Image (cartoon, one colour):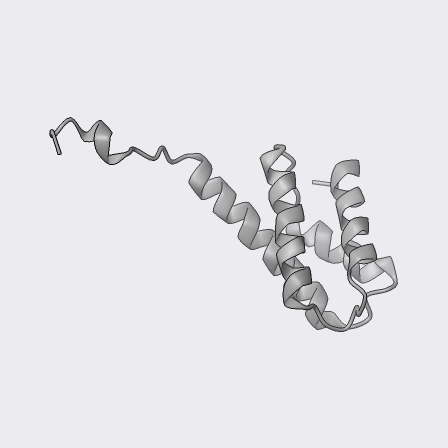
Length: 99
């Protein structure tokens, strides 16, 4: 599945946001998670292999570790969203047990 324009725009945002392409700061990791979360919340789907390929060929990401970390973050966010999107959370008051 090829990357959509929306996903490519977000990958470019990540590239612009990260100052040192050889390592990611904790703040940058949090921002990257938010970027991928916004994509999945907008029903954008992405192929992790395509994201990895995009970063490999983008030109600025010469160190492999941050690229792998970004792909892992994308995978984590997408999996987490897919798992929780199908769950319905019931509050304690909805149990009908009188407690």
